[in-house]
Image (cartoon, rainbow, N blue to C red; front, top):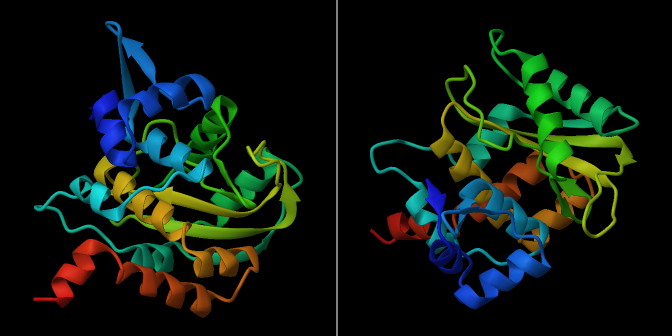
Length: 232
């Protein structure tokens, strides 16, 4: 689903005038169709994360389909794995090694996944600041995986991803999902998590797997839907 200016203003809790200003001044990604702007939800979420624009978890609740059971970020991260000391001297070699360690089924074409990740980087950097990047296809990719996963890789050497804040990247989150809906769901949860001071500090410090997962589990309990379930 493509978003309108009004949709984006509601998602980011700002005025429509601010959205237009961000299009002109801060390169909010969008395109004109019949004289009106349209936006990809995934690209808006990635842009908001990179520009440290707050996205309310409540505003993201409509990403979910009540008929589809979607994974929590902790489950997806545990499924995808956390890896350390990933080699690479540039974006291409680093992402090549990231794709090699992601826990994917045998039938998934890793070369194709790398190709679309690099194509996305050529369009615009997926670095979100503070040494973190979230490489993903321009259009959410549907692969032959049964369950969505998020893989966190810590790079052995900081890599220049052309981040807006100028900081080289050393932590890479890669999202792989079977559906577009689950892609958007996990991207929104990850954006929420990266706004948490404790979790971001652990990522920057390359903390241990259990410590990172514990922090993500805490954050998943702070989402509106989790609090609603607890109150029942």
